[in-house]
Image (cartoon, rainbow, N blue to C red; front, side):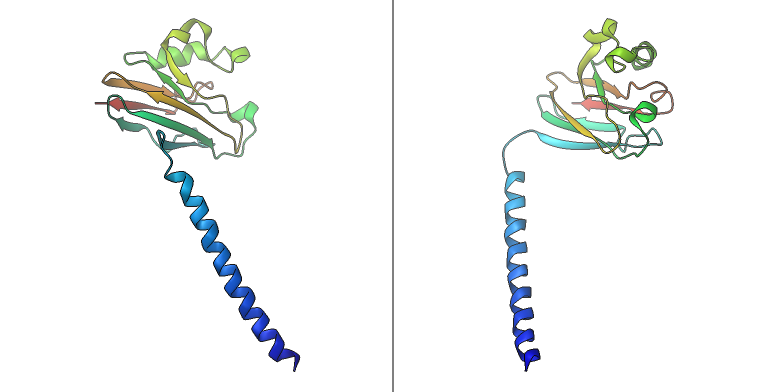
Length: 161
């Protein structure tokens, strides 16, 4: 006789849990419809690679660049950031100047004028975002300024047309 009571209880629980999941999905979808800049997610990993090395944007477009360190190595050994430089900047020279700039998280003070924006230096499973708006067409280099990361390929170009 208790089995007959158990079956309706289980069915009711399944129906109610299904309804609450639909409500959660609706709530989660609402923020995506909010106005704001387009978000581009860029991941960085322990192999010293970004998942993207080319981004195309329109002149005047505002974009949120979200960097996510998906690696697991400690920050002291394998930190990552995203530095967006002005069009025409020498990314290799910037990277070389950044290597000894430990005190400023590998952002060389002498080349601060070359930077449009940069994230903070991220440890494993951390993320940070920057919002940028490009008002002129051009090719804007981006890179990780942690020592040697640029040299092994942690870099890319934002093309604005």
